[in-house]
Amino acid sequence: MGKRDRYKIFESQFFTIAGSSEREGGVPLPEELFCMLENFVYEKKMPDPRGFNSYVLGGEGDGKERILRAGGYVGAMVFKDGTQIEILPMLSARDRQGNVLSNKRVFLNMLRSMRTLPLTNYNINSRAAENLNIFETFILAFINEVDGIVKNGLKQTYTPFEDNENFLKGKVIYAKHATKNFAHKDKFYVQYDVFTINRAENRLIKSTLKFLKNITSSARSRNRLDSLLANFDGVELSSNYTQDFAASVADRTMLGYRNALRWAEIFLLGRYVTITTGRNVAYAVIFPTGELFDSYTVYSLGKMLDNQRFKAEIQKKRYPMLGAPMRKDSAQALAVMTLKETGMRVVFDSKWQELSADDDNYGIRENDIYDIYNLLEMYRSDSACYIYPITREIREDRREICFKNEDGILGRVCFVDIGDMEGSLVKVLEHIFGQRIASDKPTG
Image (cartoon, rainbow, N blue to C red; front, top):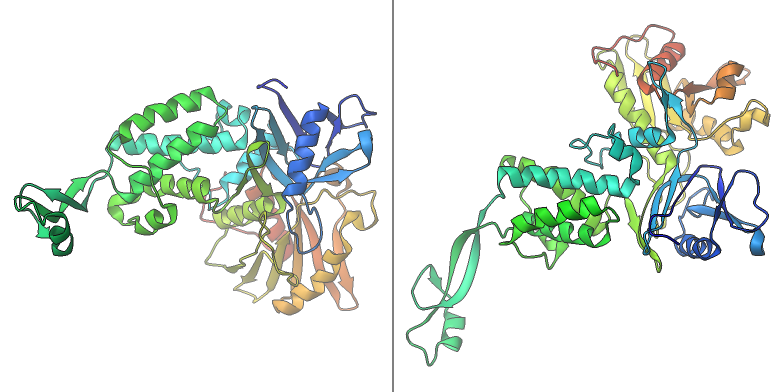
């Protein structure tokens, strides 16, 4: 396998073993790589309370006919020899101007909506963002943050310093002075404050720079990391990440450090994002696609919602992480919105699933249909709405999907174009609440 080998699939596609009877739609991998990927997948089980997509890739078949199918998770895996595997969302889309968006662009747009990812100082519309795997994109975002810190000068602080000195300064530490200077009356074991760049925040950033330098697969990023490290000569590496994060200051003087430290938490502690390694895997960054779609929906609602007319309650949904068991829950909504004028209360949930007009109930899962009733009771709502990404087939079908009983419509399925989420959600709200939705916030 060459160091520049790169393989890409979309959700619902799959990998096969090169030379086997490759099924249509499969991406062949060298057998050695396929086996390493398979081992990694089965080592890293993704717990899911509903039993769907227990692994990042689903294994099917036997012997040489084995396949690994994508579904439910997206991200990137980089092996120790440099080989890259990328899994992208299943849908491409069009923006408001009618331009076709690539699957990678859809992925980046959804990532930008995640509050836990500080992507504010990185241009996701750049060519580099399209070409790099998502982990390397994160590295570039961190580099840009640290570059800004270096240009503005590393922050210093007064830090306690202890040593056996030839002069009296600060305060004498008598217990240590008596032990060390019993035979040296000319010395003093003292403690005093020094003004230094060797503070917790700089130690964490230097540690992150060194960590990323050792694992990045981009020569350009490695050079930039090396250049930035040269500015941290007077800073030690962190010996205790958790302790240094606890000691970090979050006041106005340190605002320029905020995003860089958030990235440091992601890289060093694995917080907010599932980043993992394996026997043959240098690193892997994995996202449940449903979580991304939920985040994108909430983010877009927040940008266009008129808070004078609506009361919006955003629910805190929980998602599984690699190696972290998750309790089973009853139905849980994404948001509850009440139109203040009429008191009409609607519960919303988003579902990342490609529906088909040819399937029974369009392919809507039976559990989701039953959950409509649970949601209505749990949130005491008048109606429920499931939001799905639109596909070309559904766009052409144009039939409304409703859940009804003898009292009328209990819930609806509405579709959004992930290339124009805000515009799509305006139409959904207008349809559900039966009136024009105005917003003081600009869209786009």
